[in-house]
Amino acid sequence: MSGPNSHPLLVVLSAPSGGGKTTLAKKLLAANPSLTRAVTCTTRAPRKGEKDGVDYYFLDAGSFLKRVQAGNFLEHATVFGNSYGTLKSEILGKLRQGRDVLLVVDVQGAATIRERAQDDAELKQTLVQVFLTPPSLEILEARLKRRGTDSPAVIQKRLGVARQEIAQWKNFDYLIISTSIREDLRRMQAVLEAEKMRVKRLPPLVI
Image 1: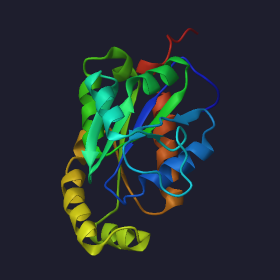
Image 2: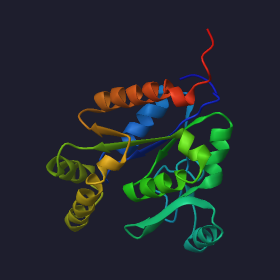
Image 3: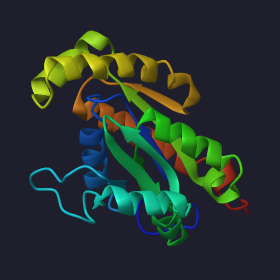
Image 4: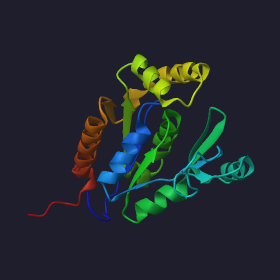
């Protein structure tokens, strides 16, 4: 993929917590200069090294609620006590510039976007949904423990949620069973290349 195009993609990447979506997103962005990440809003505090407007738009609870009430979000949800949301202006603005947009959201957010796209021709035309998951809950548990950011109780809670999320895989366009970072990236690239050749996205062929 190179340069702005008249048939941009909105690539929605989802996975259970600890499933590797953040790592895959970073690798995908590095490999595709024409792909831009949609910056989402959150009420959680910035982690070390995170920057406002780059990693997230960091909002207080009151500001977030005002945006919800104004209908500014394409999707929003509260996860583990923190609110997250994707601004419609963030997505549509970049698509209309001819940019391919990568949006990393949880399963709940992906479901909302899928539903919205049914009534929005612009979103429906561009939407590509990919679900990434480890091959087993045991492997996911090991990843969460290795990450070292959650207590055992929180990890068990995340695994319970993950079990429900993984059951939604059939609602996505593509399923990637995670193996290695390199292989996950290769498969994701294959998805993007295939979607760029979808007949519905191409202008009429004149020979």
